Image (tube, rainbow, N blue to C red; front, side, top):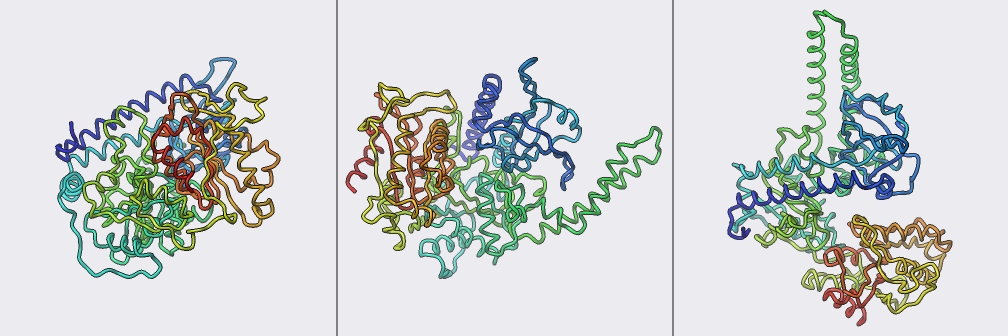
Length: 634
């Protein structure tokens, strides 16, 4: 069915089918992974901790039974636990039955270094957990997010009133409505940022802020929110990931705006925690009173005597007092807050039940599945989307659903239908002009300009900002490597993809060579920072291990981070080194064909970009051919 000729309702029904496909695919993949992948593989991938110790259990301020677990080994492995993710406990007893899963699912409340705080069902036997030898915890399949997305699509399909109006607007060429007033001047923004904020203020229905790398999208969004708050009492701010919600919340708090964060931050520090709902709730003067009532309820339940006539009466009376207090505290917290911030899925939280907002801001909108955006959309009358659909797309695991269009985001769809609702931010403050120019020409129709202060920024005089080292042109000491072709990729299992050990060695050699040119003292004095990026997780882990072993890099450990492209989203470094990994005779480059990933990788660099890759393999693809030519001509 062509999306072009279908009605908005048919198009959303199609979305629902594709989302259902994605759900089945991911669920099946998770089942296979649970059955077939050994625990140590899961630990290495950051999807499980084993063994763990239960350090304590208690009821948190939201009256949920909570356990704290601590990991005791493999503490250097970055993990994927974060607020809101479902987990299951297991016992791994190699002698008897192998792995035995506990029957309940918990939810991560905090993840902090080597400590996890997990909420569990009320009837969980904490003693069982505490007394289990070889206890472990792993991420579970996230049913809830899919359920909420499917429900949101159903609501949009049936939607009347404002929700129905927005649905029809997004899927047809009907013009979005705007207010008319003279532009407001904001001296601290550049011309395109100012234009974007004015467009946001004029939009009755929808506005899009398209922010390419380094163009100050967050700055612009924060100003747009501030200006909106001069006209509205409260706004809802959402993003796909917890990290993006943290980032925008922190910037708003820095501007003196009262933010109430639903859910917990990924970086657990006092500044970030201070504006979470949970902390504010605990800090409320009525909270000790509420806590005492809840305690009384628990005691009453545990000491219930047979034939106690008054038990129900007393219980009901305590429960209604507790509810009354909870409602009062909530009303005060929500009444004071100017911004309510949560992830898109988090906007389904029962705390927001019945709440309505004038405006919804969605940050990183180009990374969110359309269905997720419909979760908060039912609470608002207009929406502002910010992001960049030329950077990382949403993750879709089902190839069939991806081909049929599930990866197309709401932001892209609206930008295509209603270009008049889009402002492109054009001045970037991150990169040397030469690094920016390639990305600008290829992805942004050549419209980006480098701000004067960064135009020629570099570490060394007369440095060439971009270099591509063709691995095929090298021979290294191959004693520890495959002697036939040290720079050939190897396949390491489905989920890790590929690894190229020779290229990894060369990557660190190239960085060492560049460091020697700059001089050790200067790197330390000027806090020059470096990102090493590889699209493949196996290569990232191999590079991390190599880096730890290299004596030369010891003094610079804190200045160098190694991660995947997704891991560097939204970040920047003085120097970026990219290891492309792929090297084969067929010119197969796998998911490096998704050029948006490469756009992200290249544009993390402020002053110097070093790419390592097999020219023969890579340049069979026209994009990499163009990139190679461009760098050659610098």
